[in-house]
Length: 344
Image (cartoon, rainbow, N blue to C red; front, side, top):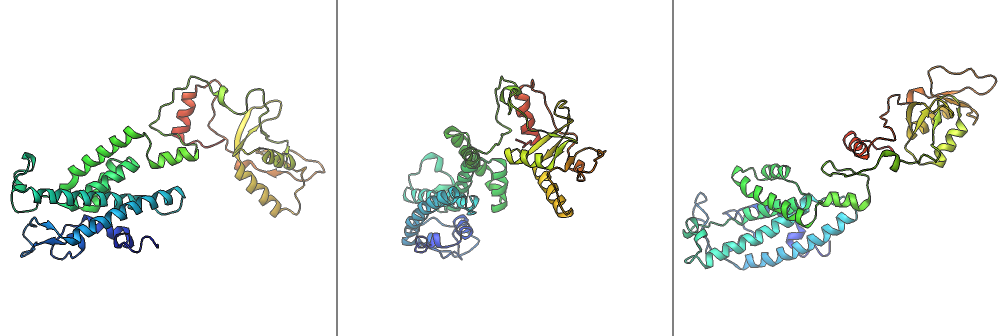
């Protein structure tokens, strides 16, 4: 706040700054960014005449340059610290600042060399009307920066169309969006969100990525064939054994099998469901001894003089997605990617 307050372009709201940079100078616009020398608006319906930039415009240019540097540094820190400061509006603001500065520069270039313009400026720029709209440059700059940061294309054009409300600006916005994406892909394939996912090590499988695996599921699955598998039997696991399994492992779920000898798969149960079920059983019963059986079948076995069993069949997924250990890894990755599987 101490660094932002002296500069009025960093002091104002970001959305107000973007609106100011997008706006074309007119009769009612009295900001420094529209301070031109001898520009008289005799009629609001007439075209804006070309004019020399005044003292207010040059003051606004260096203030906008300082605001650009400030916003860039602050955005880097706020997004890296994972605080909810946003990324869309700062990116639009930075792009609009750069675009407005370039637009004013082009406008003054046309004014200074009005009599000897290159061939591509001839025609409309040879008249006394201003053929350069700095506000349009700000729109294109905002779309380019946001497209380069997020690598959006079609959705970015829709967003900018909703902001501007003009169909005539679609072509330059499309050109800026595609150019920013090509330049960004040339420098690095990942956008800002994909880069942070990769930096934080989140288990995300992008639909667009291709994996050239030549191994089988048995080569990468945990545990390996010679290691014990954490399983729950359907009618012989006690509460103490269940708590020990959850304490000694960090898996999100466990397979339910017929028995230790015949590990035929019955279903799959999630860790959070087991914790909720045991907590509810303790709250419902007066005591929950460790010798109580956890039953995952429809028929409850007959217990002699021991404590009553806990019925947990309702929390079992009886149709889990399964694969064999000889399944190719390409198929495994494709299943995890398209079905959104998250179990570990």
